[in-house]
Length: 473
Ligand code: GLN
Image (cartoon, rainbow, N blue to C red; front, side, top):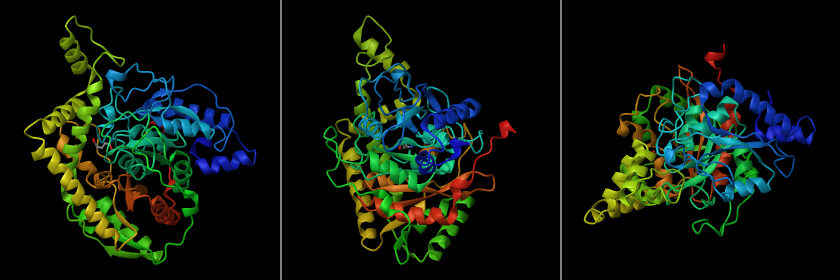
C-alpha cells in the first residue's frame, strides 16, 4: 500500500531504509494497472525505473500534459499536439530533476487546459475516483484523480482560472495556485499568459509545502517570474493560528449546494475553535469575475494558439494550397471548446471591439484586485468555497458552456488578481463526493495560507479517507 502514503511519509521511510524509490514506483505501476481503466488519469505512463538520489530520493511524480518534458510526448490533450515531443524540459521539471525526482507519467486534462471537467480531452475523459460516473473537475483532472486514486503520490498541475484548485476540491486532495510570478512558466504550454501558474496537487498541505520549495523562484527564461526570495514553506507548518484574522466571503455561499454550505459552516466552526477571528468581508466586484475572465482568457488564448498552424508543430493536414492547409489543420486539430475560445478571443480583440471588450475587461480586473487589496487591510487571508458544488455527472454540462464556466466562479478571482490560493478538502456530500475549502492570501504570502490550511487539515484529517472503487468490489 505504498501508493497510499504521502510524499513526506515515504521520504521518512526511505530515510529509515524501510523502502526505496523502486518499490514506490512498482507499487504505483501496479495500482495504475488495477484502476487506470476506470479513471483514465494518464495520457502517457512511463516505464523508466527511478534512480535514488537527491532530496526526493527518486520518488516518482506525475506531470500535467501541458508541461514540457524533454523527449517525452507533451500533447495538451489535443490532436494538434498528439505527436509533439519537446526538445527541452520546463523549468519546473528541471528543478524537480535536480532535486532527485523521477516521473511516473503525463496526466490527462481538458484540451489546452480549457474546461472544468476533463471532458474536452482528445484522449477521452478522466473519471472521478470517488464515483466514476462523475467528472473529476478540470482542467488538471488527470493530476487530481491520479493523486486521489493512488495512481500518483503527488503531481503538478496548471491553474489559469481554477484548474488546480477545482479538481483538487472535487477529488478530495490539496491543490495550490501560487502567486503569479512565483513559479516559472517556461515550458508550460501557454493558454492565457497573464493568468497561468503551475502548482502542486498533493494529499497533504505538508507535501504541497515541500514541492513549492522546489519549484518556486526566479527564472531568467520567464521575464514574469519574480525576483523575490523564496522562504522555506515548511516553516509555515504547525503554526498556531490563534487570533489570526480570517475574512469570510459570505455572499458566495448563497447559491452553493447543500453539501458546500454545510461543510463550509463546519469549517468556520473549526477555525473558531482554533481561536482564529472570522471577519465577514465584502468583495463587491467578484460577481463580474467570470464574465471578465471569459474576455481576457480567450483573448490571450487566441493569440497564444495562433502558432499551431500545421507547419511548426506535429499534426498537419496536407493541402496544396497554404491557406487551405492552415484551415484544415486547425479545424480538425482543435476540439470544439478550443475553437469557441479562439473565435471569442479573436472577436474581442478585433478593431472596433477592442476598447468595448478587452480594455474594459482589464479595468474590471483592476477593480477586482482593489477589492482584495481593501479586504487585506483588515485580514490575513480570505476563506470561501473552492467550487459552488460537488462534482457533477459526466456529460451533464458539456453542451452548456455557460453552466460549465460557472464552476469557476470562486477560483477565477485569485487568477485575475494574481494572488496565491489553496484548496483543502473540507468534507463529503451525502453521496460521498468531496468538497473543498479555498483560502486566498496576499501576494507572495503563500506561507500564511499554508499555516491556515495546515491548521485546518490537522483538525479534519481528511487525507486519511480513501475512495473505494465500486467496480472493484
Ligand atoms: N475552467 C477554466 C477555463 O475553462 C479554467 C481553466 C484553467 O484554469 N486552466 O478556462
